[in-house]
Image: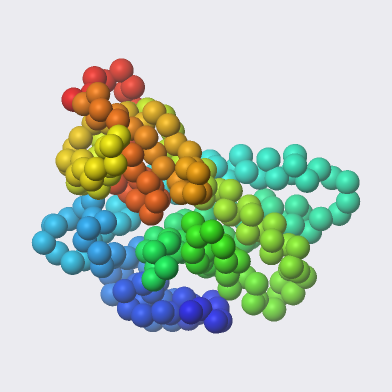
Amino acid sequence: MITKFNKYNFLKEGYSDYNQFSQAGANSHGLGPGYGFAIDNKLSIYGSQDSPYTDQYARTPMFVNQLLGIMKQANKDVVTNYGAIKYDQFLEDIDEFTDMKILRLNVNNSLSIDVFISFFFGEEEFFGVFKKFNWVQKEEFKTDLFTDGRYSYIDKEYRLKLDNYFRKVLDKWFKPKKGNYISLKEVPCRDKMGAKFMLPNKANIEVVYSNDDKDGNSFIEFKYKNESYVLNKNDYYFFNYWFEKIEDTKKPLK
């Protein structure tokens, strides 16, 4: 459990999740915070499948650009929704939140997703985590920004608004747009009868629908070789890592 954040020694919870992001010491890979290696090679889309260390961040620039676009739109939406009826410190600060990155997705002991992020507030980088992001009872967003004495004005209402703001950005990023994609690895999914199916590497698919089921689990419905399949629950959140969009939507599916 994370009990305290410190800007220079943050999010330490064991080697597999956090050592690659340490600010206090040197990074063994020399790439700095935000780059690292996932231990679970089943989540791999790059490198040798025989290695337990796999690069999850080769497409980070593309992912960051997507998040930046969503953040810009979310900023406009927040201002429109809250309006300017009274002074609101969160609205005053909203444009200061920039350069958000997803550092890591981790399947926790409750079989839900932990989402580790970084972001800039002004000219300084901060780090945070959404524990049990897709759990029924969501935990509050935790970040070292909230424990920084320079920002003691950040109260409970401000924290709630920032929590909702980042969740909105992440929800939009996780949800794929309709269109054609190519798989970057073998992907576990289910057919229309509920039977397990392994989608092969480099398979062309068409995303036709994305929503939540009656139990609140997010899912993606897609077509492969004219058959319908579903990617759901935790696997839903890895879609952007496992698939790449085919910009030419007229390209025929194989």
